[in-house]
Amino acid sequence: MALAVAGAAGGLSLLGGGTAAEAAAAPHRAEAAAKVCRYEVTARHGLNVRTKPNGAVVDTLPYRKHLSADCKASGWTQLRGGVPAKDIGKWVSTTYLRPITTGGICRYEVTARHGLNVRETPNGKLVPPPLPYAKHIGADCTATKGWVRLRQSVPANQIGKWVSRTYLKPITPRGGVMAGGGGTAAASNGPLLAGAGLGVIALGGGVAIAALRRRAKGLS
Image 1 (cartoon, helix red, strand yellow):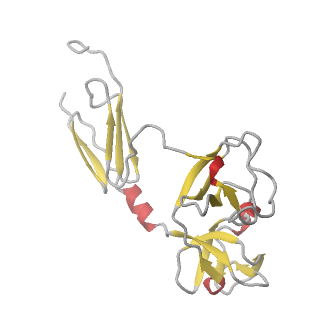
Image 2: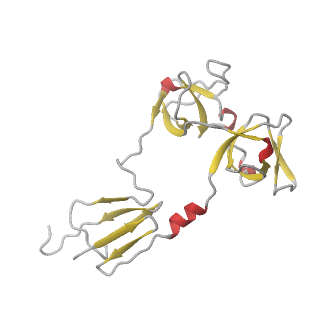
């Protein structure tokens, strides 16, 4: 049976074999999501967290705290990470936020078998607890004299703190090439059959096609 696959960033159409699927919604939802940036609190007496712009105060974030929020040049922004769960989605004034410029955030695995010390500054005061062996964390991709700052997957008090790059192993995504942004990945060791046994997964505008091999007369 003939199977024609037309894939694009906006969606997927499968023609032939009586199967048709469209995956245009996912990319549009991704585009609609606001871009998230990293910030440091500059309000020395703490930054008020509000239910809405100029709304009721529900919390206060400490001076120099690192957090994630929608990328906004001015006005108000919504919190997205690095804060207590109850503050996610709440509002803060960008007047008291300083954008943090990093070389991007990479994923790492801790290789120090007895734990990796977290420090206030490179070679500075310890910020317990140590990160356990084999823990996966997010940190700056670019090291500063052998040290990187923590960004994700660590306790809130350790966000923005420092660890030695010597004891971090970069994590490479499994499965080889990753599909996205309209890219396509297909895996099969035999004929692709339309209809029953065909699964279609749309990932961020990309397409992964996995076919269940079926033994049929004349095919092996």
